[in-house]
Amino acid sequence: MKRQNVDRARGLRQAMTDAEQKLWFHLRNRKLNGHKFRCQHEIDHYIVDFVCSEAMLIVELDGGQHAEQVGYDERRTRYLQAKGYRVLRFWNNEALMNIEGVLGVILEVVASPAPYPSPLPAGERGHVAAESEE
Image (cartoon, rainbow, N blue to C red; front, side, top):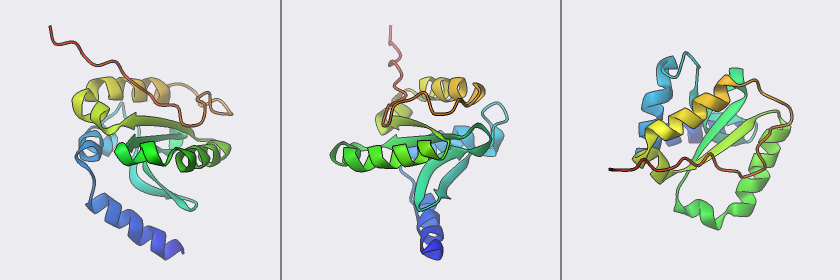
């Protein structure tokens, strides 16, 4: 099972969505205030989109299919929170249309001490307001 997850994580890294690629560009190589993030990383039997282990923060980007798998996502989030992680979820279009806002929310959470248990209810999204185009 372990080898299968490693292969699956590798495949997910090679087939990232546009939103994942855009966010990863800003998180990789410690670009976000020196915080180390991993992409498509295995935590037990789950593979998370992005994780900053030092801050115990997981960032998930969700497409339309997640609207149909709410129960699975909530169970997954509760499991990861029970392991001590904080879980932020953003819709793909948030990362594509307002990357600065998404990065601001992530930076705010990653820079704050990790309380236990996580302050975010299971499945809560780190929504950001769209920038106005005046």
